[in-house]
Image 1 (cartoon, rainbow, N blue to C red):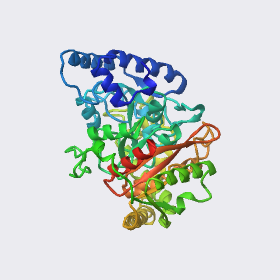
Image 2: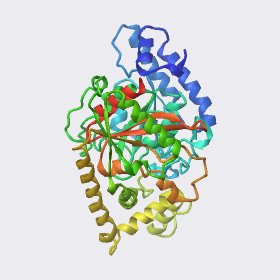
Image 3: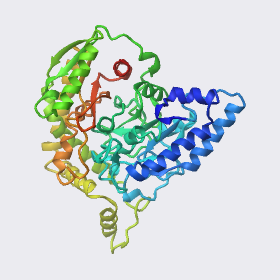
Image 4: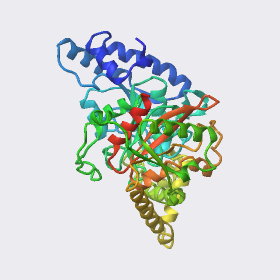
Length: 477
């Protein structure tokens, strides 16, 4: 069995035709995961026993001649930010290094109901704060294309899991680029959905007005399959609107003749790596050859997106992390101290990493009396302007296409001592989170150093089907 060339559909077909059993399929991926984890540090926890138990259930169903779902028995990885009942869920932090949740996140529950085989919980930057997984308590994930380079973050483990063939699809989260950036660095498709398209119930909150859940897969078509299972309204998440979920598989075979593509000039400026820029421009020409119209557009408010993000996100993060009191759950400090205040200081001092402490301090500062209006409130007003600008642009074009990241993957340690340089890696992905828009990373080239390049296809809210269609067409040309 060549797992490298399997897709969700071909694996499903192989199971139905009994070319291999689900146990054999699961063992193949578990063996690969064990080997690659030593080299790349992809998984915090590999769930071999649970995976094999589910595989046996699938094999028994097939033996009885029962119908199995398209995702049933398909190996996947789950970002360790998502609750998995009875399985360690650390959020990449020492604070939750012993936390075993009593219930599943909604997305996990949906996949379990579809018979998923979970290979393991993937590594991430602590509480999803970072762009390289170097802020994980469990060490960085390395890039499958070159282990000296980062796999990206915060969902670096989920992207590397798919890129290294240790699972067929995985789930990540995207608050400022944490799906698209590692997808670009690792050379796999990854989808950031419209805010609220997928439930976040049971997923550790980072910044509640920005967080989204989404899939990585080996192809855009596989992403469409996963989306059919996990998108939709959830009574446990009030931010999920009652918007009809289309059949995404049926939406990816549409002609793109006459499609209007906008190239935002601010996303192709001098700060973009030359090889990245060229790869994306060539990819756009390929789509143009299929009948799409291309025009240059301008998004001048884009330059304020990073500033807005690094006010809104730390503010919301600091509020969300206030719940970690180490009394109900969390790390118990070595020294309780003499007062409750001492206890909080000690538990958080020991439990949170440097990047989390930095962001908590920024968040508390911008929310403090005398600064709330000057920073947080003003940032929200600018955010509204960014949203309005995108709305105006989508009156003129159907989608926007731009580089996902200004450059290819960087070396581990290269930006670790310079937080500002690390933050600027998200310059092209953050605006979509600010505006709540969907964006799909599609691999579109390889640099001279053998590192992947990705382009992001951006659309108006709830246009995931359109983005997947364009990505699928490009992928198959």
